[in-house]
Length: 241
Length: 241
DNA sequence: TAGTGGTCTAGACCACTCC
DNA sequence: GAGTGGTCTAGACCACTAA
Image (tube, rainbow over all chains, first blue to last red; front, side, top):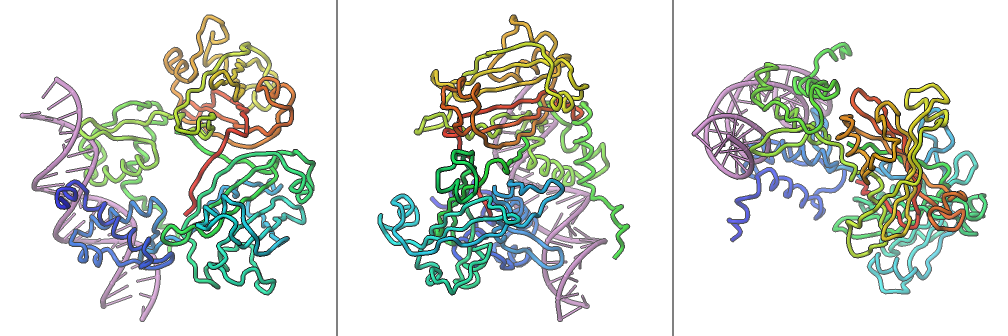
């Protein structure tokens, strides 16, 4: 049965699956060096060319990256690929304008029902809520509402723990929780009273809303995040072919 | 380190350039069959494996597609890749809800200065303007404002010419103008009075704004389009790794 | 049946990195 | 110098398409 099924799956696909399994089950974590082409070829009983093809495919899918002379590594998630990079912070000349974030709320509290469920909790469970405001040159430009699984990041509700702009660096370094991937959904809305006040814009101004689901290994969702930003500073560009 | 060693360009890159040149200069047009691997290998004096690698790269970039047993073709632009496919037309169960468009204005008129310039005209030139309203089940959901180069589509201002939902089909078939690619930019705004009226929504409701630049061969821009749609029906999803 | 792309192998040589 | 990935070749065999 199994033999019949496998007969139609190309060898390079099996090599891809082998590597992806090692990643998904934590035997390889982001940043790790994977075995070299000859090693994998020997291990899996295929030619080096087949291994090369499998790795090339995974590189194209952004799952691996290679350095000539060094080796092949498991990709680290890159939040510069977030849709939020399409906010232009008023700097017409070039990119790279820094956005600074400040925590405005941080506490354990009962999460909304749908967020509890998405994070794998019973409704009305206590979650870690962090609210931050993002600034460019003192100008508030976005509000972040983050909901974390509290036992994934124990103690992060304490004022003693400094939260860097890129929160995920803290999660990886302090709690050793690898952030593996995220899903983002973009919509638009108009500012409610509280958002308008925090952003210093008129109520009912257009805002961009970005919902992010952040995942660790084994497809475990560890954070729900809703970011609301000024629409007048946002534009997302794509090419169609 | 010798920075002048850039002279060496890999053979497969040259094969890619050869094919892309043939496309850009119109010797190959979308839908055309390109020469087979052995033919290209012979023509360019490289091995078939090198041609294969070049073609694989172009397939990954969506410039070509292949059919086993048939051959390799130049990609046709696919407007299903438009960002507008992320409008969900109120149908929760599945996709594929049809959007029907009706022309509400069609005339030659002086274009806005920036649009004239982008289309390669002097300011205050006459352009072909077409306005359409998009419906799902009688419910207006978006407004399209299209500006065309008039001599690219002569006579399209006439009421006699039927404009199909996918306008580009007409342009390709009737005027033999290949549509090669398009660029889209997404932003959000609030509905002005006219838009609100046409869409049947309150003034100042949130709307999604999509600007599209459409190009023919030789990088010639042939259309400027601005589409304004109800934000409450739009969501764009992406994955970060 | 001839021609196309799809998979797979074996091996050569080069460029880069680290020791 | 040893090990890594990057390029390139030659050739085998298979799967699909069309005449």
